[in-house]
Image 1 (tube, one colour):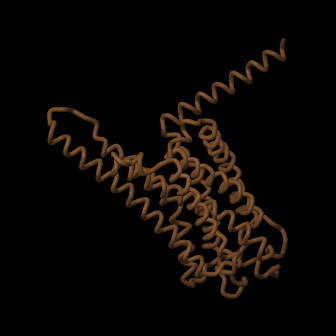
Image 2 (tube, rainbow, N blue to C red):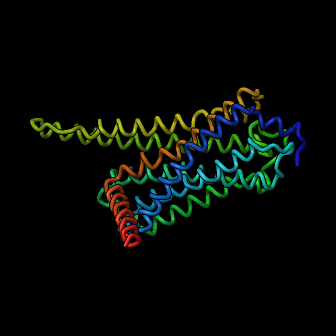
Image 3 (cartoon, rainbow, N blue to C red):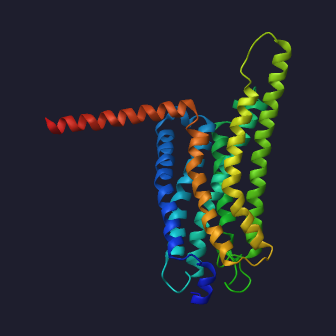
Length: 315
């Protein structure tokens, strides 16, 4: 346990701010959990969807966001709302932080895998189904989660420090070098996602230009423009949700002393990552026609079953 003076370095929210941030978390988490769990149920109940690697990647994203919503909200509120004068023990705190970090790392990693999947589906159309089998997709997901776990629990394995000494100003027991490593890694992943989607739009534009040159008399919907708008929206949301948090992390990592207002701003900005976990299903999974149709079918089936049960009770 650390003394109260060290705890005050990290728990900087006043009563009003605690109420505000609790309200934000409680407002976002239930809906995010509901949507992500429903996606897992829909994919898990459909043998046809489980055969397609793309839906396995979507399931990995939904699983990561489900864990992120649960772990983040519970641990974040427990840490900031606790009335205890002492910090949690090092092992307990780093274990909880590792779970949250693993979930968010798995979420961003799944977004990268999905972007790479879409890129290869367009770039190598003829060999895509041969190269990306269900088994290889499953192995890619397992590899992703193993790497996410290893990266996230490095502080618990020994890459840590003592608060009020050389630690991060944002996270107790977390070494600044580890914080720089993690923030840089997430930034690289986001850049790779951006590059993948930019290449997809460029290839779509090139295809549309060739089609227009060969058949100038045909009036067609510009697929490249539609993709550009869609991917611009996707990337804008990803950047808005992650860049503020990563900026604070990098500022802290280079040794700049963060003041109390900046720490408070970081606490509120971190809820954007939680919001991202709630938005992801709307952007990446529920947009898929097949998944949406199956979700509606299951919803109708459940509604009919509940109605029939109600009728039986009346009889």
